[in-house]
Length: 298
Ligand SMILES: C[S@@+](CC[C@H](N)C(=O)[O-])C[C@H]1O[C@@H](n2cnc3c(N)ncnc32)[C@H](O)[C@@H]1O
Image 1: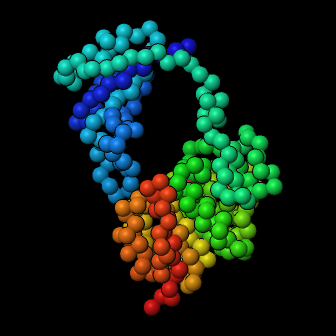
Image 2: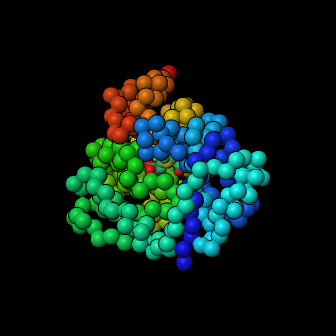
Image 3: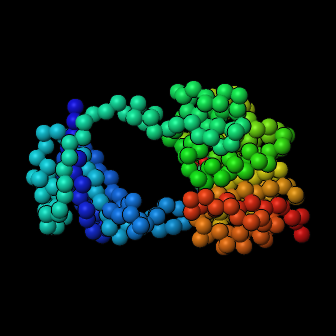
């Protein structure tokens, strides 16, 4: 089986409308991307909570799939006609069916965090059998260890978990940080996420790794205090969650924040300095890890 894929560069003001019209005309799928992705003019838009949801890139690209025998020119013309647009410039290519499982698996290799900590996909042999191997499959939740924001937190855990600590992983995604903390010797871990799918994935991943942790939605999270609180979310939620996260850290305990762009580091550090004595930020591929020690409440 094969499909025909058309790539259409278009004005962002009409991209959503044209994508909908393509589906009405008979396309099997459409996706809108930044037309300048991969260039130095790429625009990072993360869809952070609290940010406008209707913002698209300045230049958009629609990637759309049609059946193998479709008359692509005719269907694109019909969609443009419905949107009162002229015929755009586009290119078409044939996409052959692939072994998608094998292809996906080939893109995830074991990740070395340190000599003693590896993240290894379940289908892969552990490259360092004597190390701590956290087994994770890329699923529906964020957090395979390949992203710099996760890596920065894992490196911190690897360097600082001495044994017995209580840990809160706020925005747990796949549960990777809570599970890593336990495998490194933490005494207990709780993970919280606003996404019910993430909570389910975290529970599955904890089972897979033979560790016991509690994962829940924010409403079910008790008002407890922890030795370590990690939050790899994004700058905007971290701005809003400062007071709450600070309330979860014991006096003398540690906060570890990630998901912050390098240019947002000073602002976020100043916010958290209300409750924490902040350390020097650590950077990785344009992302920042902020850490601090909780001062006594006044
Ligand atoms: C970047 S992922 C991090 C996942 C994982 N902790 C890691 O380090 O790879 C951020 C996670 O935070 C969750 N999240 C976003 N805003 C949140 C909020 N206000 N409260 C709790 N979780 C939130 C998202 O659903 C997502 O699973």
